[in-house]
Image (cartoon, rainbow, N blue to C red):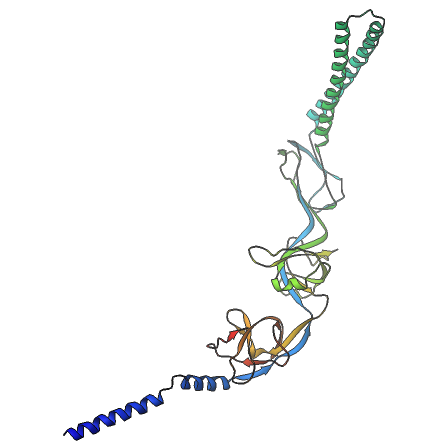
Length: 358
């Protein structure tokens, strides 16, 4: 009985030793990883050249636009233009009733004449007083009074002239003029309405040029510049004909909220197909080609941003390389990123593949 127990114990010990030798924790994961990695399919990254383009959208605004109203309150006496009329810079658009303002100006002008007449008489008296002072026939007090009187007379003339200038300006403000050439887009239907000072009555648009203010992707900042060629497409469905334009301005800082590049594009002498205040799409093209890479479309991954997985050699752990998609064409894409010619990119990588940081 004892001999049998010893044999059982020896058998269990041998089994434990065999199990211990078989348990190499690193061997199985390595084998599995090698098999999984070897199962990848690979493509090749090729050097390419690309003419960069980007799109932005926005509203087509007139190069100049302003809402016009009288600086003073009153009743509109005459409308000199209609909606849709073209006006030149300085052209009268409308007038207010000037009966009160005209009377105030005439009163002020008459006050100037009266003040100047009083000054003329005062200067004659002052000249006589000077003669008496030089002859020693006038006291110092009387001479001081004469000097004060002539100073007050001169001040009275200046005050009257200032009042007349204000009255004349007030009268001129009863005529509304266009500050620049353009088209009357909006205005009242008839005269006789009352208006307050500063109340907008007309909308004047300068349609000689149209401009779009939009934002481009941050990566376009490396090639975006003033003067670049652009094409503007109307926002109407089915519109395919573009209108030539140029980049007018590229602001030096990104938009704080969107981290996009503010860009302004201008269309000179726009055709009838482009309407002011309408929606439009702009395509901007770079001035020259830039270095890029051509890779199979199957290599592109978006987790969470665009990237490809690059392997130094078959069976090695892939490296994750962020890229920017520049152009798509069939089964290949053009990208920018930290790639090298001949780099092996993983095709259709599984979603579980994380790779190492590039």
